[in-house]
Image 1 (tube, rainbow, N blue to C red):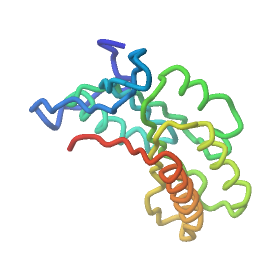
Image 2: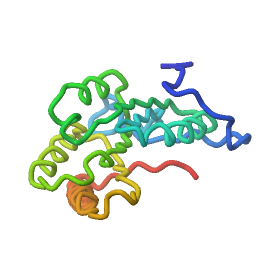
Image 3: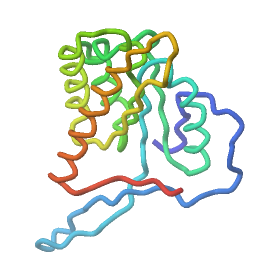
Image 4: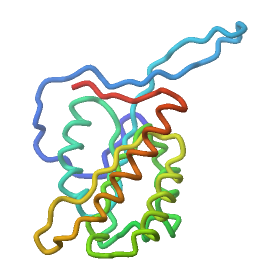
Length: 178
């Protein structure tokens, strides 16, 4: 959507210089047998998750504005992996934004729970909802109140395994200039 306004209010831009717009390559068939033409696609990034998105959103929004791509933030205060996995909210926002890249910031409110098998299943459900959209998962920061950070390991191990599996399947990665 040309001229779309980000869902967050950008803070003062950190970079005044314009950068080359980030692009991914998308095949377009020309109708001439197996030949195809590569065309740039404008990025639409969705940052979604718990309240940690609030601070991240402002900085990413600055970067998006200076780099000419669409950026949307969705914050669900108090959300956990269960919240996103067992409702239609995630699917709704993915369909609404149609992102080319997802940044999931989630896990802080999962710290301190010990039902790892259930939470692992919810994280798997969240990632499956992403489909083939490339993603980055930002887990919880260190928090003094919660000394047991086992949940961080569950998130890291699962997302690394799935990312590795995806890369082996299709060999593609999205990169932003930088």
